[in-house]
Every structure is written in C-alpha cells, then in structure tokens.
Image (cartoon, rainbow over all chains, first blue to last red):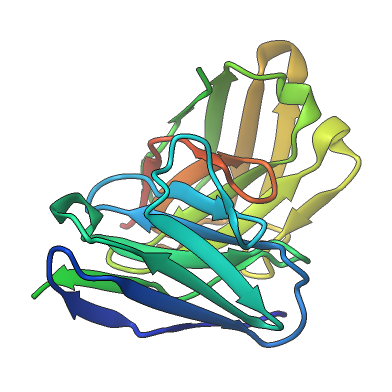
Length: 107
Length: 115
C-alpha cells in the first residue's frame, strides 16, 4: 500500500498569511494526487486534482505542486473561511490512501 | 448541477447488516468510477470501495473485504454499499464520491454499530 505522510498535522496562522502543507508518498504516484478541504460537520470539498489542477469554482489562492514524491498545497492570503482541515489523497493505485490531515487554525 | 445524496445509515447491532444508497444526478452516472469513503468520529478519511464505470472492476479495502459489496444500478443512477457482519469499528459517516479523484462528494450518512 502507498503511505501518504502529511505534514504538519496542525498549523496556526493569521489572516493574510501564506501557508504550505506537504504530502509525501511512500512510492511514485505520478501526478495522481488530490487535495481536499473539510470544515467541521461538513463533507470534504475537492480543491486540487492531478497534483496541480484547480477544481472548477475553487479560488486561485489555492495552488498545488509536485516534485517527485513530494506534493504541496499552498494557500495564499488566508481568510477566515480557509481555516479548516486539509487532506491529500493518492489515486494512482488501490488501495486509495489519504494523508492523516492538517488542521489549520487561526493564530 | 452534480448532486450525490446518500441514505440508509442508522443504528445497527454488531453482526448486523445495512445497505447504503447514493442517488446521483447532474452527470452521466454510467461513465464514472464511483467510490465509498468513510470517516470515523473525530478521525481522518478512509477509502472503502470503488466500482469502475460499467462495473468492470470492483475494489474493496482489506478492512471490509468479504463483508461489504459495492454495486450500481445505472437505470436508477444509484450506487450501493451492502454491509454485512458489521463491527463497532465500522461506525463512521459514509460518503459516496465521484471519480478516482473524488471530485464530488455527497453529504454523508452516519452508520453507528453498537449494542
């Protein structure tokens, strides 16, 4: 199984900050990497697919990049509605696996 | 507008069975791989099962293999998850999602396994 190691597990930041969340795959997954945002009591929402493609309707403040087996999600100019938990997911092979999540909190 | 609506969750005793449904609209259901993903209370996301468009392949997580079965009814634009021999550790919100990259999610249905 492919392990997805997400870091940090939690992150405190201020409104207006730029933050980066990282996901490392235990083996190559090409660009089959997605990012999700989840707010308390709600279903996850797709942000990024294919490592760097923005889902329709998602603001351009969210961006994704890849370097080998390392993937990053960057959120620029944090707003109050961006404070949530973020997950990465690899869909290169079964079993599909998720990172453990990053909780982004207001400082 | 793409919509996925799960139903069928509830309280069931250990060893019991439950069938979840996901009614979809707004896209050509038969053209997409569909998935079930679950989230135990206070925990992260866990992939459960996938079925390819046309049902060519079916995949299940090891944790549910032999107990859960994913299926579709293209005439009814619906995805199902038949769950047998339920355990306490199956307690979770179950989401149906579209495509391998899970680009759309339903609102989820809560399954509680408890005596």
